[in-house]
Image 1: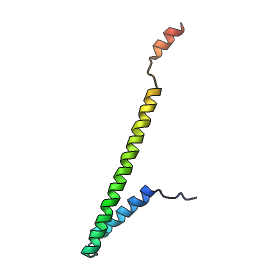
Image 2: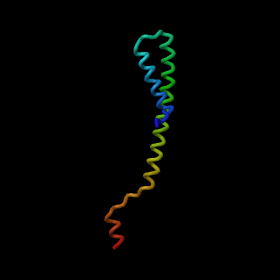
Image 3: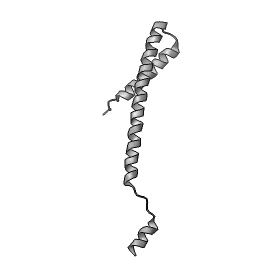
Image 4: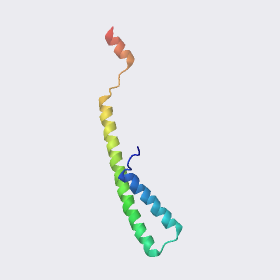
Amino acid sequence: MAKNKSSFEKDFERLEEIALKLESGDITLEEALKLFEEGVNLSKKLIETLNQAELKVNQLRKELNGMIKKTKFEDNLDKEQ
């Protein structure tokens, strides 16, 4: 069963399509400007999504680090004896 692509993946694929069309040079100036504007808007959206993901990862790492306490193995053995 195929998974549905996320909005991020769809937007990234669209950005790649735009880049290919712009690189081809087979479009009018007006079309190029429209595609460029769409590409800039998609880039902004993708960057914001990546920034939010980075913030979430950092938050989760901080939570995990707060739950893990570093202790020396030898210290635990001394306490048991």
